[in-house]
Image 1 (cartoon, rainbow, N blue to C red):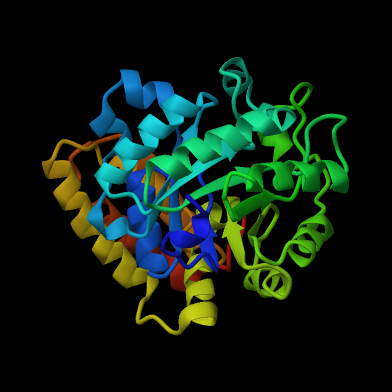
Image 2 (image 1 turned 120 degrees about the vertical axis):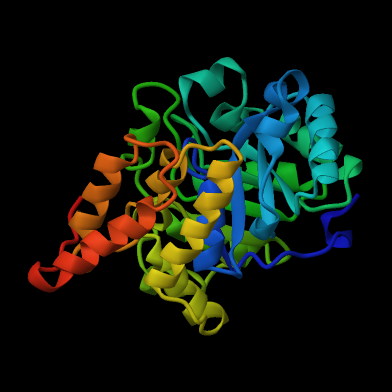
Length: 337
């Protein structure tokens, strides 16, 4: 089924899938900050869904919509099966990971190494597109190892587009399959934003979203002069207020303050703790909420030192806010870690 026949999501602003970070609690938090952003899950492998606890891997909060599931896998039939399951769970989009360079992903023959098998990726995308009525998209790098050129990337995109996929999320770096850790792969390979811009210019029918090294609202606005959308990664996690700044600039003002977010998240903590979730699994995502403001270090320290002391402390965020407010007038602006 051609992607153009499926309903469109607003991809002007999205938050990247990030392993160990963008779980359901993080996404609930990010939704408060940016009501219009498209949120992505951590990558979930097809094996985990087919052979594991489906509810544990796919459960999410209704408030997270629009939310996309990122899948990791390389067997078309398995991917199609998992896409059907995700559609039944109510996800708004399915995304295929063709960018992760970790050893674990490579051992499973998926992630960034799939860039070397464009025909297989095309077939995977085609199988998922035929299986569901929600959008199916791909997130990829610009190349891998010595396979690094604009033409290599453009040929890969062109082959995959034969499936009917029209949405390409481009992490504007290549990946090293050996020699660099996943963390280093997010920093060391040089960025080639110009390649992504050129791709959009030469393939205007594709919806192109850019990702990688985007750290400010000025960066976001600059990229949007060339592509259809911007995906924020670590900046959204480490300095999450950037999401609210983007929301205000791109979609209109939202009546929100950091303090109101703390209260909303405290109410969320109460609900989650009553359901058996330890507060530390939620509070860790809020460490950067006051980044760059007076008292930011106090806020981080309070959460870090107290989150593990009582799994049922539903007042932890309010207590941390009080500690920050009691000292904010007496400290300098702290933007450090």
